[in-house]
Image (cartoon, rainbow, N blue to C red; front, top):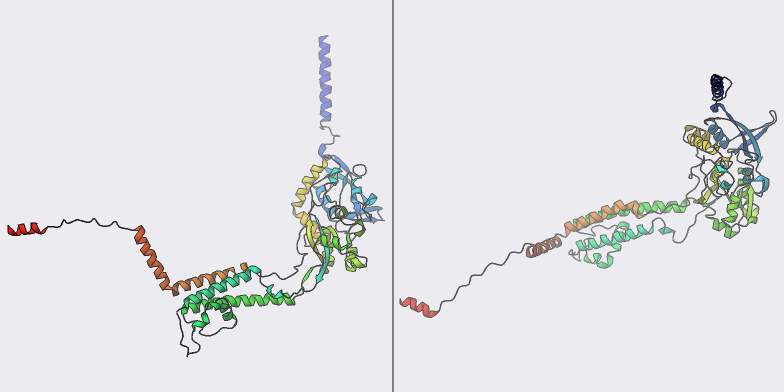
Length: 482
């Protein structure tokens, strides 16, 4: 009985070993986990505008859709570096609704997850309200949206435009340095008197206290000979004339640019000007920007007009709000930069930039694939492959760069910092000349300081007095008698 039981146990152990050996994948027909293929149903937005991002074209010969664009190439690059194999079934979804609701919006595309799609790829902006429906990967591009308006040509000249070349702090600095130089020259020339019968020599009346302010300026504009007599005064006047020459040349150049150059600026500077003026504004059809304009910026829905592509943006802005177009277009920065590459000569981005997280891929909530794709996105964005994809669709310009599209509206005023070095040299030179010229004053100060120091710091105690008692006459007589 025991022998039979031991044989049965041996056969059971052999069977169990063979079963485990087969399940662990050592057999020839087993498939390893790394070779498993995941099938993904990919939803992409189908629209007419901005093919640089997503371009879906029907191929009548092969009876299928060909999908390309910046977002699609980034997705393919991410898929290629995943640690597992993926099979893609790309299915387009039309997002050309004019009212941003129903079956034609990006939100409705995301609502098809997971019933119809396993992942949505395209120019899908990561938003807080959308994160309640799906999980987003890390963004693979920056975004945010701004206002696009026409460029305004013209010069805004006023009766006070002559003070515009210098800022207020520079004007104040000129007055202070002029006063300082006038007082210094007045002090150095106070003891100089010229005979009344000689012309061209210094005269005390010319340097009276009433001329302190206008004397340096008058010398810069209408220089005279031998106005001052001392060499130190002439040195100070020479330094001041050098500073005045630089200031006059800079003033003339800046004023000329203000008066002659055609100054370019946006026709509208902020959202409040558009809303208060009752102007029509546009947005990209199907975009979340409409909700922002209505809920955050408080635009009337009747003042909003949807458009699909760059050509419609151009025609609407060119027509204007009063003739059936719009005064401004609100859209995400990547789209506006693509527009400016085509029609950038007469348009400009203005106002503040309203930020969001950018474009990302959408997966079902709590999907394990979100982490794998996010890690792969980091690897792609940090590689040279990302730069090659951007150059392929956008040229050398970076779609995330928030510059180059805005034009300076006016020549800037020159400020004190532009001439701080010259003012410092002038001040130090004047002080040195004043010290050299007025040696009498400094000698008196030195003598007074020396006297005070000897009196209080190096004071000596008074000498001890020896008292001599007087001798009376009687004593003297007694001594003489002896």
